[in-house]
Amino acid sequence: MRLLGDDYVLWRDAEGLLVGAPDRCPHREAPLSAGSVKDGCLTCAYHGWTFGAGGRCCDVPSAYEGVPVPPRAHLSTVGVAKKYGLIWVCPGEPVAPIPEMAVDEDPSFRRINTEVKVWHVSAPRMVDNFLDIAHFPFVHVGTFGGAQDPRVLPIELVDLEGGFHGYRYEVVAKNPEEAQKTSGSAGPFVKRVLTTGFYLPLTVRSTISYETGLEHILMLVSTPKDEVTSYFTFVVWRNDDFDVPADEVIEFDKAIGEEDRIMLERLSGELSLERTALVSVQADKAPVEWRRRFTAMLGA
Ligand code: FES
Ligand SMILES: [Fe+2]
Image (cartoon, rainbow, N blue to C red):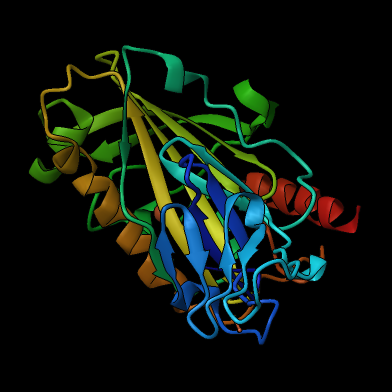
């Protein structure tokens, strides 16, 4: 996998623990991801050096028995964790923990994961979009958008549960047949109470509550592959009766994501973090505040 312009290899050691390291063999820089894994050990495809738990080099096939492995042959590993069905990789010192989603422990909710896609857009542009509601009547006119008043009421930003920061708002969403498995209700329109917020650097959570008591929580995860390419995936938690198959529940979310992707891939280059580079209005309050905090985090 590629993260912030660098490639990493990930594998599971003999205990099943994830190991992550730069995808470059310390011997002659062959990509370790071209190697093979057996019994939890990763063997480089070029000269067969083998790496085990913690990235320790445990075999140099060209060396006679008793010759010690050079100390610099061990891999410098990176932080890797598994949470919410995703693998989280941290190439440096973590500046913040993985966001806490208390709902993951709640038995009345099920968690639904989906594939990780590549979007040809910078990750900050994705976060900017996920915090923005003013695009709904335009970009999402083919799914849920277009039923609401395009005017956005004044936004009040507050600290939300789990270290997220954002706002609460209501929208009237179109509820076409394809949406009804997700919204859990019939009728051409449905009221959605949403709470949307960010967790630095690049995670957005949107909680959608329906009048029926159904909650549909989305965690939108944007990961920079490089400046202008990102991975995108989302995780859903939902307190329904688990009747509708998971794939069908998230079909509508996927269609919405596609609308965002098509729009965002039309934007070129990085999102400027310069405060006055873009023109913003009241409706952009959340993305502007995210950008301010994100820039401060990068500066620190
Ligand atoms: S480059 Fe990996 S073993 Fe030589
Ligand atoms: Fe959108």
